[in-house]
Image (cartoon, rainbow, N blue to C red; front, side):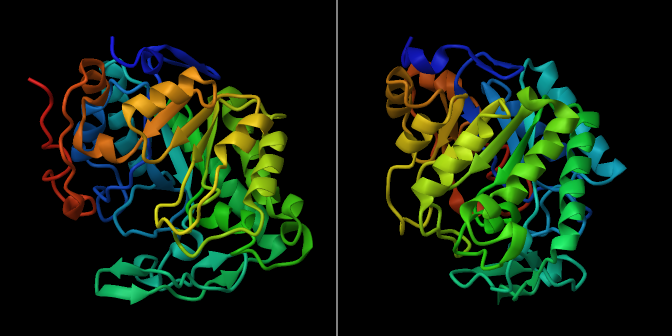
Length: 357
């Protein structure tokens, strides 16, 4: 078999992966106007059930946290029922699927949230991009800084979302601590300018993420909980003055929790920030380490063989190749993705990519 290390089973906490080819969380805005997963989403995820693990897309933990408009939620019964159709179908095909739970933070826009001002650790807007609203492109708005007294409510929303994900039949959850959304905004110095218990030193900036992790673990147990981080990603105007120090500290703290896995974006989607974060995180972290961004099958297989990582979450390749593991096994040509349809609606560019004959 080609790439034998990719096809070794992997025990990620309580989740048994038949291979190490994970599907990365990929926002595709195919939920309905009430953020309820659709039958088209059922088809999309079921097509990809041969992944070692599907990490379902960023899913809002509360109704005021929309950053895309038609992303799914997990905060009411209709959404739970919609996701239950997805998990039942994936499980019927022999797959495993976890839900990425998420709050958009300052990336939320009032146009998606009944005019509500977004929230963040500090009152500074995203400046390196614009948001696509129903009325066209707009600048991001300046968020309202959360008071410390409001933070327990945020933690409770993640906990409630974790409970709802369990009711919806998922095999676990992944906490979204990456890409310039709320938890990442608290974590990195480029977005967190507050003082007090949740600002300043890295230990304080990591506090909210660790408290959310503990709350989610109280629902699922640590062996069904993953966490995604993006130390170098400058998307949504993010940066940190000491990413190696921050994430080495975080990895050491996470060792105490024995998570199912830690999921690391190794680079920057905007290609502005460079560096090696995998090596120091691997040195500090004792658990299952999943990497993501820009991998070929050959590179992924080699890094697993070298012991640097334990598996790879593939993003863009999974957009266009629902049978990605089968194609890797056969060393077959991959379908080309159609980026212009990534965030459209309907089946085109979503469920119409062909599998191998």
